[in-house]
Image (cartoon, rainbow, N blue to C red; front, side, top):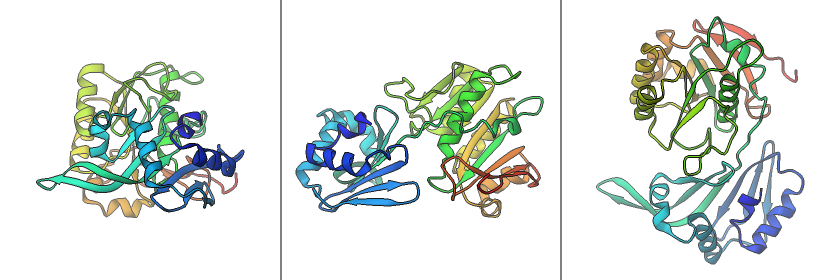
Length: 306
């Protein structure tokens, strides 16, 4: 965790390290707010660091570490509200926003930081992948609430498909990584293990990235994290109609909830996804509760605690 700890001034670094102790594997977020205690979020609990309280000077130090003393280098990140650091950890930024004609130009005064600890769980998808293959890989949708491990699962699915498993040969995989979370690329180089036959389009909007990836890299499988609006859906349909298998994720908790969203409703009604994985909020990140077929029939329900 050196790449995370190096961001903090010495006093905060020492106290955070002491409070986390041996629980780095359980740590999910470190949240810092100007003049407020530091908050450590673990999977099932949280801790508060009451001393030292982050000051304005501490925030200046951390922003300098993030930007390597050049805010110009962070221009895109300041506009998007997050950046990815070495190790694949994602730092969310919030504070006073500058706008031009109603559009965000940058965050001028950064007074809130959320460091999301990257969790690369090799083998997280081992139990799931066999259900995604039936004489070929199937269009798959991963559904989960925030922090249920959608990215953790889709990353390991990517690794397994790209590497091959048992008698299934490795496939060419294209990852459109708009928020740099799946591969966690730094200057175009993936920080996570995503397999030997995987190509990445990093920091590119999903709709444009899917079409670029198909034209330039001819993937057999296209992987996209957290689809949302109509443009994403239209690009997904275009990719599938081009003969590419799509594996993607979406925020949600139930199939009924997804069916009430106009853009996603069309995909479900057309039975585009032959597999739908519903993640479990109560277990460890990436754990699933159900796997459904295209008709909404549960083909596997995971036993609680099993």
